[in-house]
Length: 98
Image 1 (cartoon, rainbow, N blue to C red):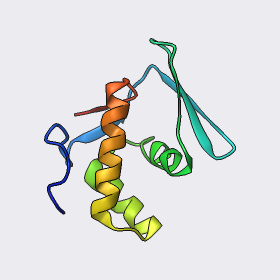
Image 2 (spheres, rainbow, N blue to C red; image 1 turned 135 degrees about the vertical axis):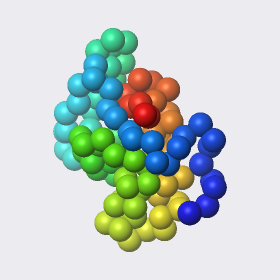
Image 3 (tube, one colour; image 1 turned 60 degrees about the vertical axis):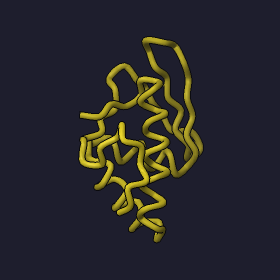
């Protein structure tokens, strides 16, 4: 793997969904609401797949490896894209890293 991720994310840290977030799937896409802020968020079908996989906390490494295999895509690219999305989601209180 390349060192293309921001330093603030450890690929071996476990990713957890934050508890105050409610989510549902509509037409193959996830819609989420942060109960504390009242903000709504939406994910496309690939983001929804990632969100579903996070039903069981896992590391970025495991998440990206699984998605790269299922989508037959470059693992480095998947990890970079997931890392960027997850950092944005963490900024909005949807996920956290431990």
